[in-house]
Image 1 (cartoon, rainbow, N blue to C red):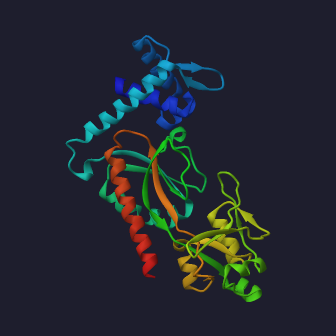
Image 2 (cartoon, rainbow, N blue to C red):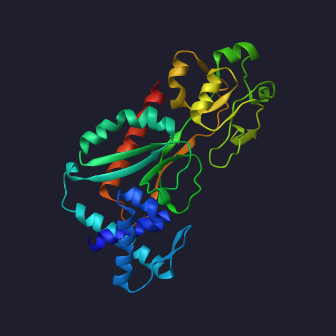
Image 3 (cartoon, one colour):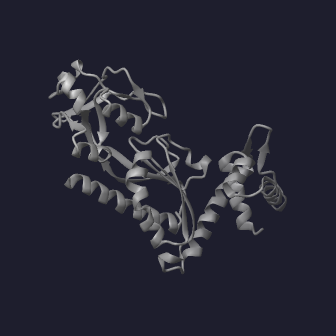
Length: 304
């Protein structure tokens, strides 16, 4: 095993805080991963990891070597791509994490175009509303919607998602149609709890340049976009949702927009990836493609 590969294994062990998870992500036997780290320690003449039955943590020397390894791997990845002028020459695997409905409605249908343009790249596509740990889970990039929290990651802005206030036609037939936020006291909402921290999001709207918040009474609380929309369609109350999410339901009359003059602020989208000096060319190619796909999807929703 060459020294670059040894460094890759060591970095994954540190990032995963364990040999077993690193071996699973690298698709290698655990014994191979352990032996690789022992080989490095023998070559360097120092202990790189503290090992206990519960966890693996880097020593002070291990932390220094981990940083050098990350830089070395990034430089090698970039050097390997220097003379590959054709996009068809890009190769390798990308692990990508997306919010469920963006992945299902926007990215997955367009993904064959990317794979056709880059036949050497394979994609592992995760779709969840739960925020994964990119470093620990070995994810190359993740799309996040809303305010950012993890400062360890590099963030690239990908635009904003307009939000609409909607309710089902059946709900409005029973409870009436609100025309202003002051009417919210007489209405029900489907309450959305953040999958990350459990916080129930308040109803928001902007009026005269000021952002307002108001808790909305509700009997159902959900923690996924799919459940949020399903409960709204079932007539359980009002919701605030990205426009792309309910385009079809608005077109066929299942859902109806209400209070269009009092919308919440658009939600920012960012692509996050672990901090590296030089992102790989295959990651750069995917980021550029994803930007185009999202731009086109949002333009379509705006035109319609």
